[in-house]
Length: 373
Image (cartoon, rainbow, N blue to C red; front, side, top):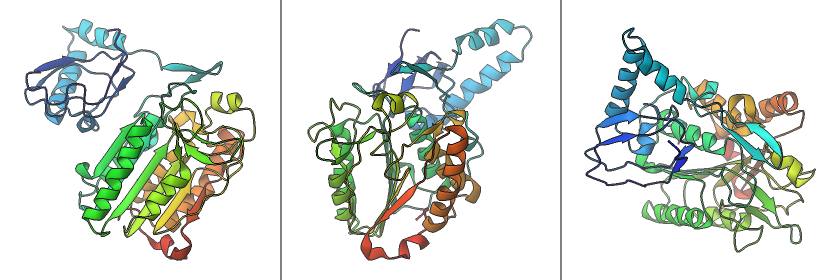
């Protein structure tokens, strides 16, 4: 009952494992924890964050999870067994609270947002589209990024269910280290080579971004970063160069992070901002790449506490939900540029305006790209 987290692939391919009891006090469960556990057919307890909608992410069989919740519902409505339902309800903790830089941030659990219900479903036909998701929330030496894992889980579900991308075409990395991020980019290059450029790539990043105060060089921040420097962080310039070297038909990047800020570092991070101070130098793109970022250069990427997501991500998912994924990049960007500022000024009392960075050779053609392919 005291266990707080289970790392990714912890029990992968454990063929003798037959049953599990996972306390509802678990704060995090990694990807593919039970993938390949062929004998696992009995679930005694699950955290409420694991559902029939997302069980495949953990490697749990839909039938086993469905059977568990069906049994739970029956016990809860059986008068002769009121204690069973009561016992389960007593396992559910209060909303998780994490203290960042002296400020308590109320954490909304995955699945509590209106974009996490009624997710449109389409056939998984986009076999030549690949998605890479990096959602960094829990940092070893920096304040955490509220709701970043929620963001990654939801974006994964929309890729799988709404954009029709097969499960094996989606690479998910929660709380990615520098090695994990570099490995993911290397796999992206290998896919591009194998398909000879006849593919589409979607990259999603939620987490900290930061510039070096001396050089103004911008970085994506892995969860194991000790300080903001090129040895422990991923230079945004290198990230863009890798994307620009691909022969892919199109590369669409969504960044719920920012690389500058206007106040004290501690203040921004405590309030849920996804940046640190200083203004980064402007990077350039090449190839068939479009980057849609959460903010303008002098702003902070805020979270939307009420919905349990980054504000940018929430609006991104809302448009996918409203259109069933049938939306062009131009339409999507127009929506984000319209809706994010409205919600931000009301919810956070701060301005936030998404921006787009486009490879010069694309002209306006990118606006016609469909996000689903």
